[in-house]
Length: 402
Image (cartoon, rainbow, N blue to C red; front, side, top):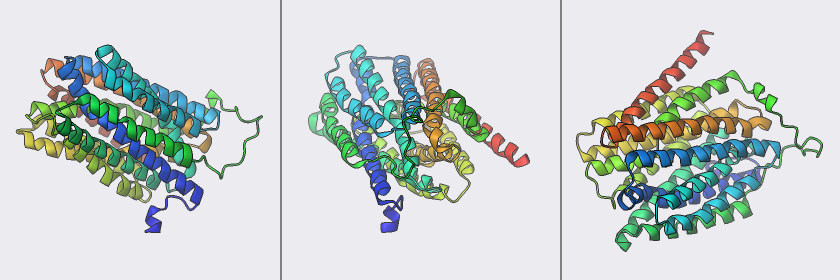
């Protein structure tokens, strides 16, 4: 049991890795308490169109990914991860009351954007810190555990949302207010229990700021192939709001739909950790290809669903895809870069992913309006997953031929 709970032989590192995982759990809980209901709040109370919803989601997510770019590079430049993670986590605490008090589209847009900005500030430094604290060839276990806890947090947040809605007669704002509690707990655990790596050599003041843009040329070819795969894949990973809206179109009640997100995140949570452990032993790129094919199948299910019960299979497959790929992408980035460029590598990844999510959400929203329903988003998702899988298969074949 102790071996199962150990992500690092260094006890200080192991404690920090578990603390990061619990921060992810509580952060996921707080985020899902807001996000699992926000699309309905925007559609039903504010009367936004699918296109407007897609643009808001796209801009908010793009803002988050741009923040990830700069925070990742700064974490390499300053040789400090925790300070940026603290700033981003505290921002997530402060923004929750704005969701609860918002009376129109402007404040929802501001709150959504700043919320994603806060997430973006902490994301790349967190990923880089996990790599710093993890043993060689043990990164898959560390990322898998972190994403498992993150997904369990999403599951918990979805369950709490449904319970509070049921008890309060669909009081969205009460859910938003209560999301402050897990967000604050995440900040406190981060502040008191997460430490930076203690094994790296101390950096003298004369070398502290030696990061240069030209260092990017040291990133290997396989990293750039991974970025292309990521760009295509992230165009298919539009907001989960479209999953919820598709469920509503098929006849499910709003009070039940957050429970689908519980299922989605339960599958993700129970998949991420074993996939992370397998990734330390098997071919990681082939595992990523399999995960992308699962998302392709998910889009087909969401498009062709003949009855509302089939949405359950779609949610299971969507969660399976996330569990198979989310930690795996981080692991592939970590293994392909030198330690002093990890923050920069994650920053570039988040930049490409952010651009793709902006275009993907905007296209998904526009096509949904044209098709008069969220089903249009899944046609877009099907196209981009096929392109992503095709490019990754080509890259694997090309490398094998060489």
